[in-house]
Image (cartoon, rainbow, N blue to C red; front, side, top):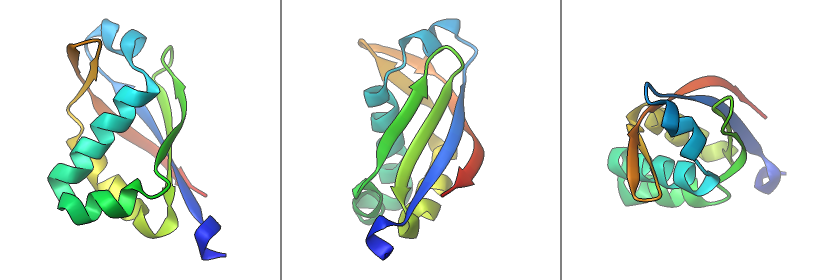
Length: 105
């Protein structure tokens, strides 16, 4: 069934600032990814990816992030991930990037 088809994107947060991993939250990751999608693909890309996009898992200790999106929009998501440049948490910006480890689903 097409409505249930999902893709899961496993990423790791890479940052030279050790405080970055300790301060990241699901919401901060989601906002950073949505911002990158909007910058790269505009309103259309953001609308396509926002349907069922969610941060399914976040381990701040290891910097592991699992993102979920619809199967038909995962390419838009994956192509925007290299444009994540920072995470914002508690009014602080931490420079970082997301390294895609695996796409499955």
